[in-house]
Amino acid sequence: MTPDYGFLKELGIQGSNSGAFAGRWLTCTGPTLDSTNPATGERIARVEQASKAEYEACMQAASQAWLRWRLVPAPRRGEIVRRMGERMREKKDALGKLITLETGKLLQEGWGEVQEAIDIADFAVGQSRMLYGLSMHSERALHSMREQWHPLGVVGIVTAFNFPMAVWAWNSMLALVCGDACLWKPSESAPLCAIALTNVIRPVLEAEGLAGLCSLCIGGVDDVARPLIMDSRIPLVSFTGSTAVGRDVAARVAGRLGRSILELGGNNAVVVMPDADLEMVVRSTLFGAVGTAGQRCTTTRRLLVHERVAEQVLERLLRAYQRVKVGDPMEEGTLCGPLIKPQAVAAMLDTLERAKAQGGKVLCGGTKAQLKGRLERGNFVVPAIVRMGAQTECVREETFAPILYVLTFQNMDEALRLHNEVPQGLSSAIFTLSVRDAERFMSAAGSDCGIANANIGTSGAEIGGAFGGEKDTGGGRESGSDSWKAYMRRQTNTVNWGTELPLAQGIQFG
Ligand code: UN1
Image 1: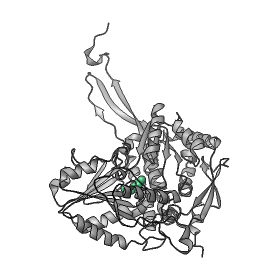
Image 2 (image 1 turned 180 degrees about the vertical axis):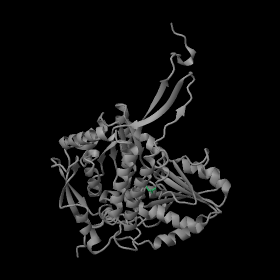
Image 3 (image 1 turned 60 degrees about the vertical axis):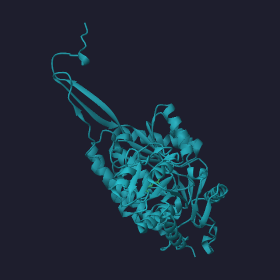
Image 4 (image 1 turned 90 degrees about the vertical axis):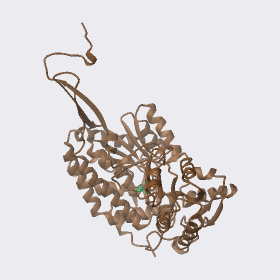
């Protein structure tokens, strides 16, 4: 039986779709891309991808729209973003289902992701009235000094499959209130999510005669990704993806003196102290390690447990893993959907082989899950827990799959050393009832990550905080707090309202 995909129609998805929006959907001349359902291997729809010519048209549309947009008062820009948020609210159900269909995330997670996009729209509306600059006291008499924040231009947004809507929203909702235009290159594994979202917000921009403001360009490395990264008309590139690709993007963008926001790999750990509430540890680790089938940047990949409670934690966790239902992400009760591609399954199995060769013991899962009927060709795996000994090379790598490494420690010093010894630095958490240990974990000598939590897992951050991390995670910050500043240029203004011309630093000249 073919399930009812009526929501595709509601989102304007057809059998064959244009992959380039430049204020209007273009006829594309690049290669055709199939979007497939990772739970069934079935094709959902086709996308005609952009070639270099359509890339150029998208870029021009965004640039043209920006010339007008940058002069629209920021609170009015906020009003337009508010309406985009309203459109996403109206279509939340359909958008969430599409995320599930195309990426295999659970329905709850699909809806949660759309909510995250709505939340950042709301946040950006408020921010549109708070693009504050400082004023300073000039050292010269009858002078005033201040700074202003101005729009940057066209922001290039490159997103990954695992958050195919929210990460675009983090960037674009802020960029828009900041007065920028957006050019979006989504993941080739989630093109329909991008097309649908563009269709959802399009009427708001069209009503303003500014449809090119949110351009979309789906295409390959040579046709779209590289031209975007190398385009000197794009002052800021926000890139979400692997550390390997991010390193290349960073070098190329820096080479043309552009700016980048990098949201790269994570290798997030939960530290469990002997006084932790173990029930909370188990529940949050399950969500952190198995949620989104281990394919979040914030996924819990390492469990560092005090040796006094290690056996107890493992026993409870194994019991919880036994109850995890692997299956159709559309179905209620499923806790682990498919991985995005067959290659991701192969990568998981390969990593587990290496873990075993390094002395790791697979305590549960770690195999392909062979499901029946429609799901027979889905990319399903059974989430794995691996207990590691002294050798931990594979633990240093991020494998985008549900593998949880368990390591033990004897004291906080050792826990912190283990915690910080991986190359990545995105998210982290400690479970303890001790204020001292919790604060130490979040201190300057504690976790080296961009996110450090106490009694909350590593994933599932709210939009209000700045999101991002250090070291191989790339150093970028997106979403809440003052992340908006990255999307603007700062201008310092000094005004002489007197009749003399005093020089700074007291210099006498002539
Ligand atoms: C990502 O995995 O790229 O904190 C983003 C979280 C989500 C965002 C994850 N709010 O898990």
